[in-house]
Amino acid sequence: MSTPEINPQARSVASTQSEMTEIILPNDANVLGNLLGGRLMHFIDLTGALAAFRHARTHVVTAAMDHIDFIRPVHVGDLLILKSSVNRAFTTSIEVGVKVWVEHPLTGLMLHVASAYLVFVAIDDHGQRVRVPQLIAETADEQRRYADALLRRQHRETEVARRRQERMATASLENPGAAARRDSTIDSQ
Image 1 (tube, helix red, strand yellow):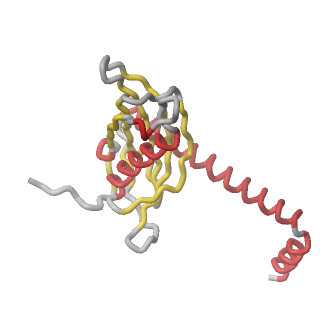
Image 2: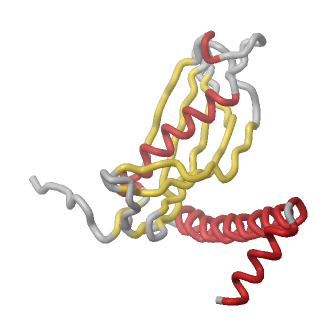
Image 3: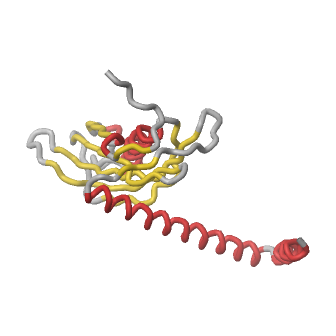
């Protein structure tokens, strides 16, 4: 029997897939008996981290929860089923998609209740970023998700730059003297 390579140059999407099932208990719910959104986000983060870890085979930390849709409520007693897989691997970061279903325990009826995209960064034992293997997108759906992940990344980068500019503008308005000193320091360099 062969042993899988610990850190190959590339891994398939299938090798990253993870699944978690939880029964929703009263301590997971609000006073209406619905699963708390923060608790659902916790479950999504855990399931996403499993897929990222399977891909990187090193520690991963959550860098962003890019998007989440809460589609319908989950009730006490329901079975929550979360499935995740890597959408794309960049240099040190990994985008993971998580899809969440609820299964009614008596009828077996399954409904889609949430979806999310998360970004994880691979790190070593000292907290330093490490390179991750490339991702092999084999099916048409995997290839679509691979391409879409790049668009989401570009959107995130644009948004980060916009917020940085906004903070700088706000700081200049709040303390114009500091902004002028900073500008003259930059000009003299």
